[in-house]
Length: 483
Ligand code: NOJ
Image (cartoon, rainbow, N blue to C red):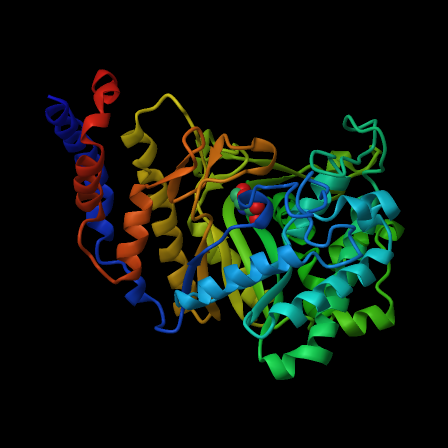
């Protein structure tokens, strides 16, 4: 009985998926250069758990810091954990890419001196980076200093929606902060920290260890809402404020001219000494890409203090043009799947920075979890397959046009903790049952990615449904009611 119902539902779902799969069956990793790297991305805070075990200190996300007092003794158990992880990846033939700071930092540094608002953090970060190069650099060949500073600095110091929750009280609901100045000060100290860490790597480790170092930026593609010169200029402004804020200093040694023009003295000065360290302080750049938005001029904001990052660029962002959405909305709702933007974004970076070596360090699709759905529906993530597959097609196109992209990583392997959205947003290619011992279930996208990587054009859908039926035949009653 249960099996009959299963097959009924499976047939329905399979005909729906088929339309997507047929067109894309021949598109596999063979379309990419043979040495191109494919992988998945994750982060410590979002995956590890055990926030107060084995001597871990709290981070500003109330979490694990690997050096428990922020700057003191190294936690040997933390080191062992990462040694085991790195060794296991290498044993399985996988190349680890390590990010030194993915949003969270020790709370102790916040308490001691205000973390990113204080210059001291650059030296502390460089010391921490040096310890990591020393302990893991014999095996880790790809390092990035920071993940998405152009996200975690503005949300920490401009809107105050992430730790340390600072912003101007007149703009948002924070107990302290200054949205007009602090994001730029914190960002400046972060650039210092990046420059110092790269400097240490280059002086002391790179020649012997033979690795590479870079930074990961969150990219958003911006289309002008109309062809008016005002909107075209607004598009350039928001590109500078979002995409180039950190990349211009690291590649060219200076903040974007547009930021100088609109911020004046609120933008800290890059001294000669810092410029010397910053310019060219990367071997590769990681681009995280998910979304695109329309940009339109908001020049009316010019004389209305208090200023903040979004007001400073005098731009309004919208998700629709003439009532038509720019792409498929994800969850978090601010993220929208716009595959063509990946090609445009890569070309923007290629042109602006003279074709640097790139990795597409994150791309994927988040959807809103619904615990009440039957398991099969939780796993049948056609929307994710479609979004990722289309993004890969546009990425491949940019490589054919000459962009030097060397790898692509899906965010994410497993469903995990999506920051302020907690566990409600699902990015994994594996569903995790958080109510049942963290059991893992491969979604359709896991089957698709495996076949794609193995260069197979067979239907991942059939395989997925057959496996599902075998494993969960007795588990499908609720779905019939909904079907
Ligand atoms: C950006 C971040 O690096 C990661 O932490 C986040 O979970 C994903 N993209 C999805 O929002």
